[in-house]
Image (cartoon, rainbow, N blue to C red; front, top):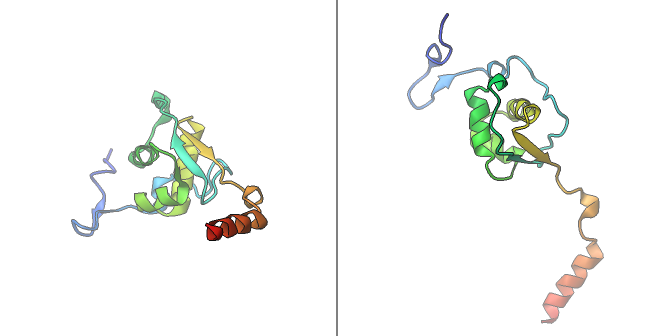
Length: 126
């Protein structure tokens, strides 16, 4: 049986291996959870992966990136992976209990415009 890591096609040393995004997700394009919004905050739980988790190197890399709470869009950017791939991989980590996902604060709970104007006027009065 061939080793997929050593059989990767390399364009050049700087570019790294050529791996299609669907290969990283096992052909899946839809995350297992609907909890992922672009601005959802993701953080590692600190739990140890079970031996049955079968985490790929990309899973482990994402787990390392979410040691502190970060928005999913930032994780995808830092990982250099398409957002859809990151959502699928994070869904796997969520299924294994290795991450927590917090939804962004809805716009309805942000301060009212009138309150913000009062604060601005108060600052100007100083």
